[in-house]
Image: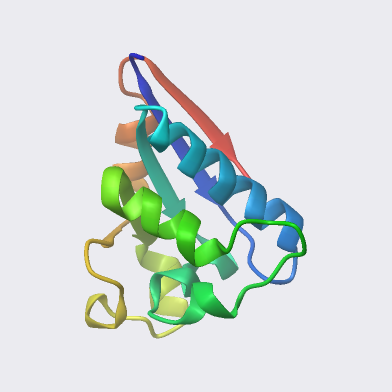
Length: 120
């Protein structure tokens, strides 16, 4: 498969089904060999912190920690700079491999060649 899939998840435990859909699509794509970039914004920013994905629960869904792990291993996970700052999350607070970046990097990614973007 060619191209890149950029997914921005803007919600967390307050909207569990929408949140889980973003992680499910991201992990399914990465397992299929798609170049995936998952952006954690808004309340999803908390999932960049160790242990937070393990606290998330949704009946009949793959554990969020497993989905996030799949994307971290084979794709790119980015924590929004402003969202991190609003929650006092520093790069030292995040899981290994998660980068912190802002809107200019997001725009660069979604304007790239053969890119599809989804927002949840």
